[in-house]
Length: 500
Image 1: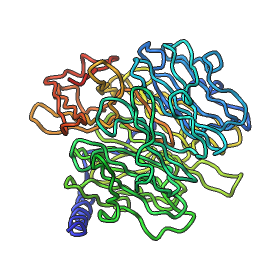
Image 2: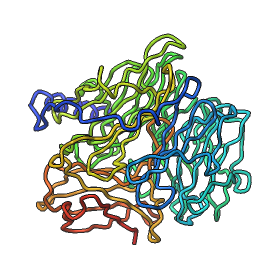
Image 3: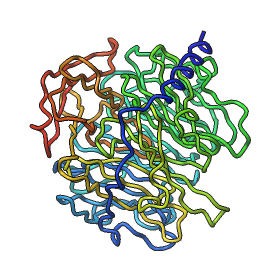
């Protein structure tokens, strides 16, 4: 039955491709590099993961970047000007502790977001930096049960897998078994250690989403070194790998092939969350058919390139109402790798067109995040360069004219206003009840990082919309709506939706 559904979906998409869509080929890219000297680093200090959060609760997003030297650099956003404050705040400096993953999460629910740093070298322990009310960070991993070693860190995901209201932690491992930790009052206990969930498959990417719409988060794993991918259905007390049954395990890979990350987004605005998987090998785009099955449509839509893809992130950079996709990649022999990035512009039924080649933004090979750091209504682009001759973590400001910055920013929180509802879904509907777009509060991505910033919806007009937020809960999917939201009233602001 599943194969029949996939075939029908594929035929439908092929037919759609023959029909011109509404989207138009984009104008020249609206980006400019900001503070290039500040975001460049010397040789040996190449950049890996980039993660965004408002660590000082002043209303704008700050940036953390891990460098190959062991430094975790923190930039405080002072009204659009970035100041390096990591040293003063107590974050690690040079010393050989290479961090391969950064993830922000308020694990103790005190209203101040904390930072996890995962090591690349298995001899080093995981570190967790508790946020001391925006004045500094204190390393507390041993105190809270997370100072474990033996892991070559990749994606680390803060999320509430058991729907008890606090953030648990899932960590992937490039060289060993993945691990799941339950949060018990601010301390962590490893659970399901012997289950299929914590399998060793050289995992790099992890994306959580409620694919079966039962109110809890399921887990897609992008696995390296020829291993098959996994898709674990959350059954409460256990997880079941349904990837083989769904045809999503990608068997037959060579040893040098595999998934390197994943990114969740509704690229066709049908209300269902799709999954893009950047690969060593050809990329995959898993279209969500809405019935619990997926179809790989990467080839039909023009994103099945084979250029050693690493990280990916969805974002509507031109505010035309369709999610675009940035993919970081590299080519070349060892120690001579150079970036070969793609910004796939979403042209609706016509598929995707790469508009990044040879441009200002074609400079990254690992991390990528879309954020509106200056709150002007246009998504800005944050990337990292690990293999380049000087490294760096460029930030590109979106220079769309004011008339083009049609968007609505939405922040989802729990009832106390804490940003911990990772995995929640947000949908917009027009006044006729037609769906406009869908976003997910990300559980991590972009190459072993994440952003806790607001979801930014590009809009074709600034007409009023209905906002619908779907929370995961112990009683299933819980939906809250806000009618007649006027996007014009939120220019330069954020609409915050608290869980009731």
